[in-house]
Image (cartoon, rainbow, N blue to C red; front, side, top):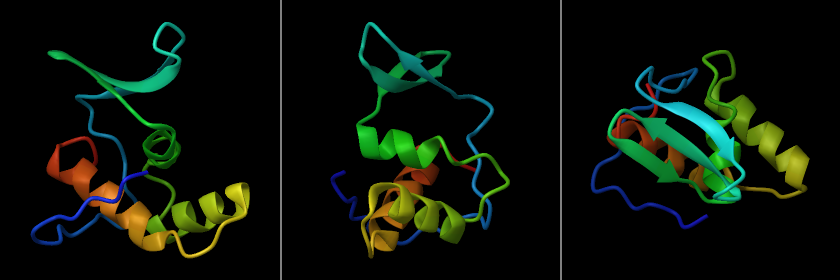
Length: 95
């Protein structure tokens, strides 16, 4: 995942969820996860998809980070996850 560098940090919800305007689904033709919305589609990279798949309104940001660190056997990815969520919030994907 390419980290985003927002000009100003956007406050994140404690338990992020996808906006109702977007639907996350796997598209076999694209061989990727995508966000569908009325005007089109956003093709996600693997990292962004793994983060957004966990934005269900039940998990906290910290729980998402912990789950991904455990799943992929990596450490210290909290800043990248938060950057992605801030970009998603800025674009209206996450609320």
